Length: 172
Ligand code: OFO
Image 1: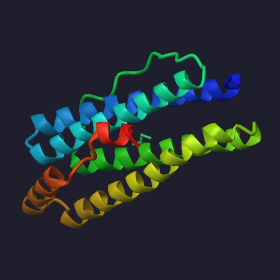
Image 2: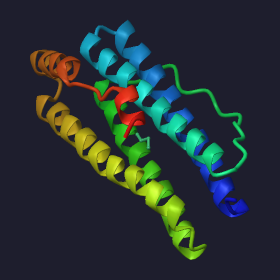
Image 3: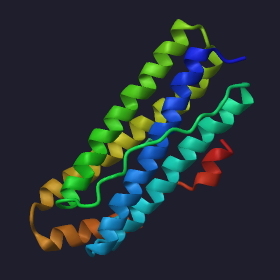
Image 4: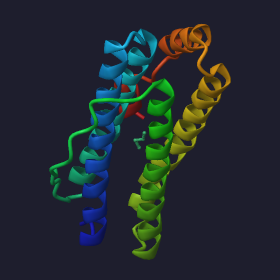
């Protein structure tokens, strides 16, 4: 049976992953409405990926005999200043998620829950990848500055960036 402290932290993480999915959906929708088709596709896929992160936690908590509690959350923003603004917010958010995951891992070690700690390793690795991808996108946006041509190419590139398929990751 999973310890109450661990169950609570996993439920909070489920909420954070669900919120990540919602904010990326809101950002994707803004991109779609503002002519950034590639970024919109990329972010819609990313939103699906965050939902998969949430589902993976839900299945794990149920498998370990815990109780899943979905929580209320704030509505994401509707307006964004630019593509740069969006990716700056994403990077900041992903850093916050990494810190949250590290805290859960630390708690697992304190509580000697090595099973959950082992499970959280997947999220630790995923965060390294996500922060690095978002940093890369932001570097390119900064290089392009306000040049429409540069942003057009970045948008095209984002459209071509393959998002991982949630079903495949769930099977891991
Ligand atoms: Fe963007 O990350 Fe989930 O965990």
